Amino acid sequence: MNKSDNINRRRFLQSSLIGSAALLGGSSLFLSARCDGREQKPASSDFAADIEIELTAASDEISILPGQKTQVWRYRARVLKGSGDVVQNLEDTFTGPVFRLQRGQKVRVYFKNEIPDKSIVHWHGLHVPEEADGHPRFVIKKGRTYIYEFEVKNRAATYWFHPHPHGRTGPQVYNGLAGLFLVTDEEERALDLPSGDYDVPIVIQDRTFDRDNQLVYLNNRMQRMTGFLGEQILVNGKPDAELSVATRAYRFRVLNGSNSRIYKLAWSDGTPLVAIGTDGGLLQAPVQKDYIILGPAERVDLWVDFSSRPLGSELTLKSLPFSGANTGGMMGGGMMGMGRNRGRDRNIPGNGDELTLLRVRVDRREQETRQLPQQLSQIDGFDLSDAVNRDNPRTFRFAMQGMKPTINGRTFQMTKVAEDEIVKLNTTEVWQLVNGGGGMGMMGGMMQMPHPVHVHGLQFQIIERTPSAGWDSIKDGFIDSGWKDTVLLMPNMRAKILLRFEDYTGLFLYHCHNLEHEDLGMMRNYSVKA
Ligand code: C2O
Ligand code: CU
Ligand code: CU
Image 1 (spheres, helix red, strand yellow):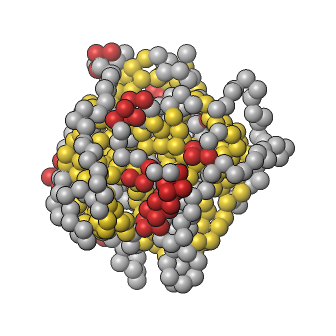
Image 2: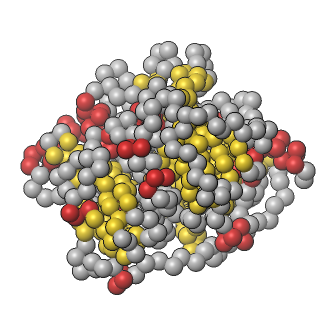
Image 3: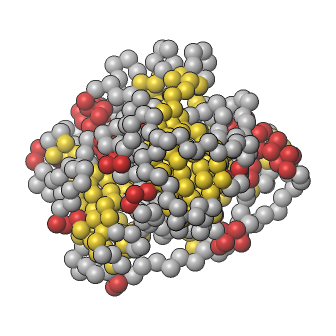
């Protein structure tokens, strides 16, 4: 197949998924105009970048619903150096762009902030130096440029990027700022997984629109405390999303890009899901699940085989009902009502209500015989016995104290680290992450809710997870065998994770990825010291 066929087919796929007139950007048509004299720090001469990308965050308006256009913020990217395939801007949606990089490439990104708010970009899941991690202390004002320089050291996986200004991450992601950072490597390429048109990003988010089709964020303080839940599901920025597919195997890269909504992914006809990867890349072998729980910021790569489906058949990716996400220790049902963000005149589905996410229609025949590999990768995990604190896990309690979401009783301080937040370079540790924590008093008990806990700068392993509220409705949905950067802690749950601090010293973040909790301060620094 020649290149232009390929492009046409990609266009077709995009239009079928995200609406009409999709075009691919990023064909290296652009020449560099990078020295605008407004850079925060100059590009360093001793960093020989293989790839240079200009990434701009700006206001735009997009047709999302019939009628009036919607004001959004969106990222757009162009390649200044290297192959144009590195960047794919998705047209007519705020989602994206999609970056496609190879492990080992050296990347320089010029982030230009053109939104009327301070911002900074964080590469979620990537192992990069502290200056490239998008810490809120590096925010830049509108009109400024921040230069990132880093080598892609991570293994092949679905990483992503989004803003990270303190107190403003929730609204900025909500307004449309989030893209994908896909990494490939030799191990993955050897498997010859479905690629190109057959490697489909599925970014799931929830949004609420007003009568004029404009995005509505938080309505009240209670929503801020529980986390934003939207009225409608968008996939890649589109409501009522549909995807037309051929009779063959696909790779679906599912990202939960929602501020606080949790999904219990399943196929409508009961076909099991086949997971091939998690946050940090390929599993050792495929895992078959009746459903998969995906908390905010988590990713799962699915192998989806339509080859035996008849032409014209339809299948729906759903979120099945589950419980535990809105439990109120003391007030029970009363708290449920509030936790579900039910507005006065709206019927906003709660966390745990059934939802339709994506309709898939098999509408063309294709001859393709790709088989699911039984062995996907070699995971050389850490060993608990290597942890310097194996008998004495570092414990972090994520809990509401009064109206404040806290970690070990603290909230975010821009550059502060506590005694128990300092770790040593080149060591492996075990951390115990606890949702709730004892003796929190009445409000603490009442305000129990899920906390998707994320650690910056590394991929960890989950070695233990205890039952939680709603356990029976979620217990088979976790994939803890692969690399992770986010672990969903349901109410009362404890998880133990193994992490290793390598290569980079400095300040990194760990926080709840319920973006409203994060913005309220359920975020702290940890410091890696030599
Ligand atoms: Cu995706 Cu600090 O987060
Ligand atoms: Cu992150
Ligand atoms: Cu939280």
